[in-house]
Image (cartoon, rainbow, N blue to C red):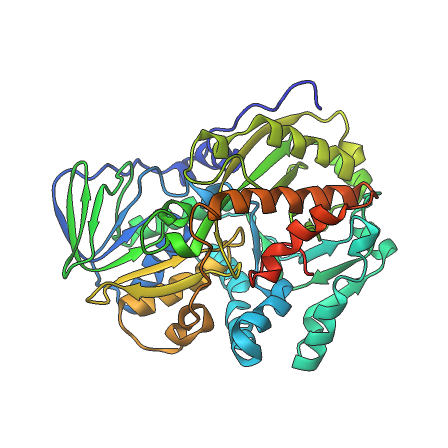
Length: 476
């Protein structure tokens, strides 16, 4: 263990960095005081809610939109994730399994536009979100990972999309980042990374400039899916013709969504700047890098020479509620810091500046799902990004805008709208089962990284979610 745990971030290092700059801090958005009416009320000031507002205005510029956020816009996962801005090309096999070949290809071709469109949006709107279109590099960190990309490549060849992928040898991977832990890998070119909080806060600024009424520090205490919908808050009531729910992990306990979502944690650390050490690694191309574990490490660099590294698939409790341990759990933050030095030895001795965590809204198919509910069909939702929401939420905004406008266009016929999400087992099996399975998955990954034998019980439990039809954990 490291001698001293990194200090807890105030939400995340990304938000600390962004909010120190006037163009991203902006003027405070007041809490709602009094009643309001709107054409559309949006619950949640993260990427999903804000992209929905953007695309609603693109389609219908005169719409009256009210957005309610319990914290600040970008204060949740949108402002503290790893900033990986990619499509779903890395999930080709699971997508075909879930949506069929035609449905998967339609989703991939539609989703594949989002990284480039986000970069163009940042440029057009003067948002410096550090957008870097440098690709997504998946690397082997133990012998069991080598060749894991071969089934994806075979399927891609059959579907005519093999050009999306480039296989790299160990030496080619290390030419991009000279980690002694890295073996071969696969590069997906059509991927980018961003400073996630700058993107979220930039979205907020642009929406306010376009007339969206944003109320921060405004939790919704009661919601009625009537016609019109009614959102009650401590300071007033919003009535609207349509509602959009983009609450991420905080929607897990809504009666409608609880059977189809669960919560995991993900924790990150960021080093102090060390551009000379980054130069030793040769990690100068801006690629985002992830390993092929089920409990994934994901890392990227910053313009001033830092490494930010995260570890997913962690769960501090039975996931029956969200508490402070998801924001910062010392044992997990220490673990990520240790892994950073193991993966990137030149950073030994470089202080970890800060650590943080957050809850992830997980779906059984690991893909988001969208739809409408209520007797009047005027309440629309997008949930379940499962840790990959930066670019998918951009597509989600297009889908939810279409649903809220009852457009009936191609966005509302995509598989993530029409495919019924998979249900998790009910309690009392659900929470203990997820905790045990997550622990087994992480233990399996750790043993394999340490070149140690995985005992049969651990392997059986780690593979159990896949055997039950979930796209979670290692393949049998």
